Length: 141
Length: 141
DNA sequence: CGCAACTTTTAGAATTATTCCAATTCTGAC
DNA sequence: GTCAGAATTGGAATAATTCTAAAAGTTGCG
Image (cartoon, rainbow over all chains, first blue to last red; front, top):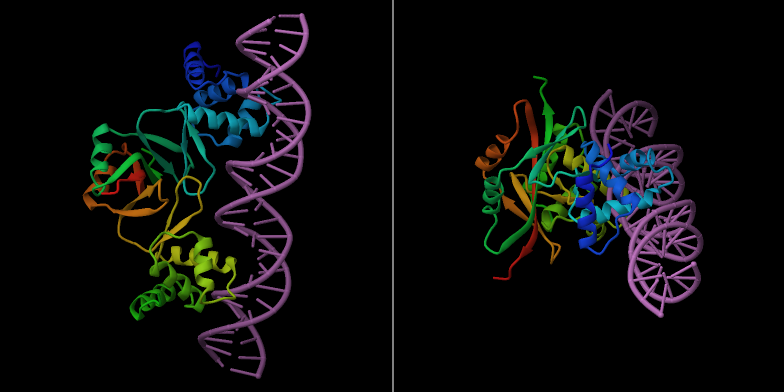
């Protein structure tokens, strides 16, 4: 669960690039997200982080998450108005929300697909980001 | 802004089909959503409805919206964790959230596109619904 | 080292959107 | 008209998140 030296370097580099410090809290929050890629909520991250940094506060977890998102190290995922979830997968992908298990799965998006989707937009519409999410069930197979 | 007899009939029919009554509140809430298709929030709907039904309560607006959604007469739209917005466009479509104006535009989705998107899912994933949203800017053109 | 100027963290209060609740009002059937 | 169930209402409650002001930590520099 400890972040590898490599990912930790990536964190430091990105933070430094934005004039921010690599603090213990940020490192642990980031490594927790990396460690179990189950799209946890802030509360879930909070409780996992506390195992290693018992004194951390929820506000700090929110702060860290915000900086990580700003640095482009993690992505936010929202389903309807449920709590925001966090995901370290930076490649273009969609999400599948399994209604029976509550689990969220990453679905790889070929670049060709996103470009095709952009073409649906009328003249003059410039999409900076595209969000695609599925909701349904997975068949035990 | 008054709902046409036709749409009102549609409302009554759908409600009756679900064993629900066509009340004044439900009619007005529905006609407000139909009247200005700008994807209003519950609060916005509340204030528009009050112009015609001054005594209505916000709780009722939320109740009405819930029943309309259940009856399949309006669709909920969410962007990140912003307030839920409501939309009477029942055809398959995506949304474009214009960051400069805050406006939301409906983007028509050809059936072919949604079917292609479904094909991105791995074996065993059955999507009941697909949500696609763009965020960006529109160029004055 | 030892301060000055930041940056970060923290606990708790505040906010916001929405839901819940219990009481009242309304409606339709008999 | 009465009764039962449906709908509405206002206010309290909830949940996720943000704000705030104070405390703690860090960095550069003389």
